[in-house]
Image 1 (tube, rainbow, N blue to C red):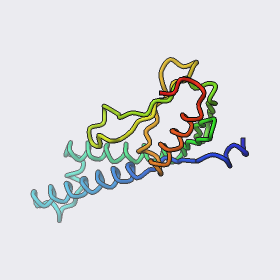
Image 2 (image 1 turned 90 degrees about the vertical axis):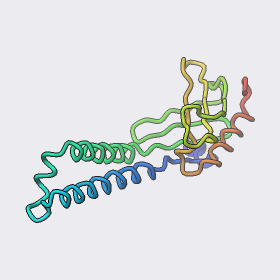
Image 3 (image 1 turned 120 degrees about the vertical axis):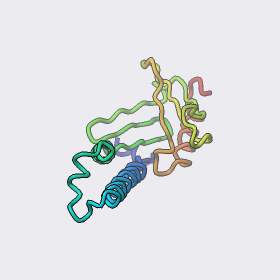
Amino acid sequence: MTQMKHEANVFSVQLDFYWQSVAVYAVTLICYVIIRALYFSQLQEGLLVVVVNDPVVVVLGLFVALSVIALVVEMIMDRVIIVGSDFITFVNRFHERTFTSDEIDRIIIGKDRRVRVRPTTPIIRLYIKERRRPLRIRPALSDRENELVSAVLALRHNHSGNAL
């Protein structure tokens, strides 16, 4: 397996979105607490009264906490996609799964219809012979989006099956 990794392209998942969401939610929470405290002239008395009694602060605090938890989980998982000339491997800290070109039924590269922010965002669907549903890869989550699409296109070109 180590020889295959040297010949393959390794793509890791970027965590920029998680960092940005934590920052935005935290800044929003801090700004809301300060504005709320200034509005009610409670800045000299302390901010604890505002934090405990305000449901908006609780909801924003939950958003911050859930974003931090998601970031920590993604950092722990350490997900990586390895694409070679005749295989694709999905690796995380706890599990590794390799699909060879013999196991792959089809590789389809199209647009994700559910994402409305960037309509040109490609999505890669791998149809595996023994799986009912396809594996979906979002290259936009990778550190090198265009290279991942090119590597999967090369895998599809080398694939002996029904490549659409």
